[in-house]
Length: 126
View 1 (spheres, rainbow, N blue to C red):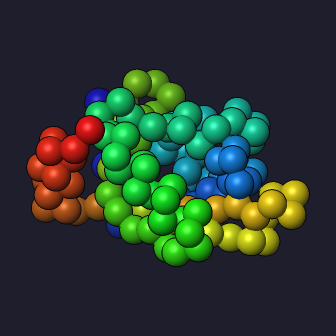
View 2: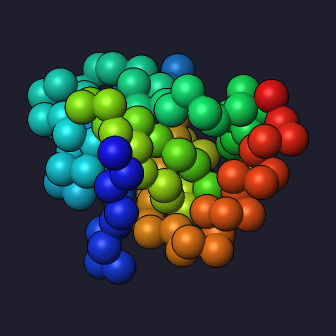
C-alpha cells in the first residue's frame, strides 16, 4: 500500500559515516512506521525498498562520500510493508557521528510526474 506524503511533510534523518541512524524527526518516524527508539542505531537501509536499483544508491554514496550533495527520488519501504516516494537531498555532514562525519538527509513529497519519471529511469537501472 502506498503512503502519499502531504505537502507539509518533511522527513529528516542523520547518520554516522557508516549509515547508522543517529537522529530521525517525527515525520520520518510517522511515515516509515517506526518509533525513534526502533530507528536509532539501525542502518538507514531499514527503509530501502526492494524496487530501488542498487545503482541509484551507489551513485548516492559515491556522491556524498566525495563531499558533494546528492539529490534524487527514492522509493522507501514502511515497517508494515507499504511504501512511499520522496525527493531526497543528502548532505555530507562533518558535524555528526564520533568525529568520523556522517550524513544528513532531508526529504519532501515527490509529485506524481516526478515519481513516474523516476520509475521509468529506475527500470533501466540495476
